[in-house]
Image (tube, rainbow, N blue to C red; front, top):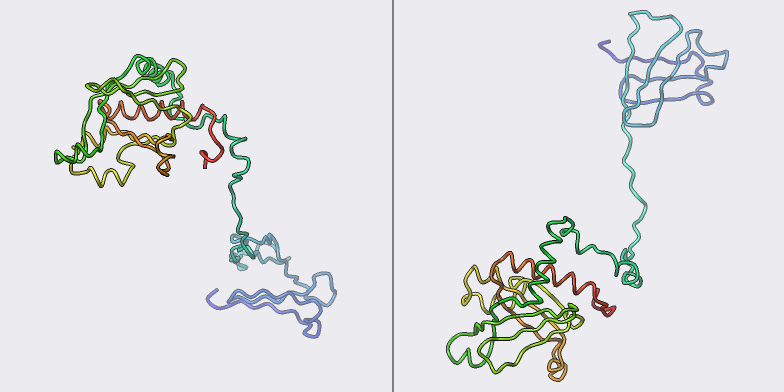
Amino acid sequence: MGHGLSIQCCQQEQLKRCDGELRTGSPHFHVCDVDKDECLPERVYVASWTESSSAQLVVDDERGEDPRHVREELHMQTLSYSPVKYEECDTIDTARSQERYSNALVHTARMNTRRQLLDRQAWLNSAVQGRYAMLLLNSPEAEAHGAPIWRVPTKYYLDHNHSSLSFSPGGTDGSHLAIMMDAIQGICSLTDSMMLIAQWESHLTDVEKNCGVLLKYRCDDAKASGCSGCEVCFLEESEAAKDMFIHSLTVLWLEKPQPHSAWF
């Protein structure tokens, strides 16, 4: 089969009525209606026809399995589907997200083993008893001494109902800072606050940066001054303790009823 193969019906005047033409470069097939009497005695059949990229065209006749007649497989190539247009719409149903997902414990996906649950419960028990930390304060007194931050040893407590977090700085007049759980606006690592890191980067060691925690919450002083909220930043004893604090407090915070706007 060194050259192209061409098969044509003998009745040329019937081509317009019964001709089916397949062009794939070479060979060319002109096949008439096999039910018509005017077709060649040696009829040509097209079998195993499917519209796909791997479709095969098998040409055979009624002369039996003659080795001189070679079967040829023609692979058809189809065009990929492309949609006529794309619809631009919001895929998030913000109107009902609070109703649907407020009780979904998606935030505890990483705390699903018994050992991790026990670790979290142990942290809650120790937080009720009180845990030591180091407050980072930004005050005019610290700036007067040539340092933009002031490290103050402190101890924080969770109440028995896990509804508030209190900080009691050591060496002060006994005043303490109490943050209600439903007033918390954000819980993150210190390194997630680009503004504070840019301000304190040269005054904190790499270990302190990795152990820092930032809390944002609503307070009356902020409302009076027109600010969006207050912040408290402190250092945990280790990076692992920081991660446990952030995760455990986030779980408590999400379990408390929140305003609708706090979820978006």
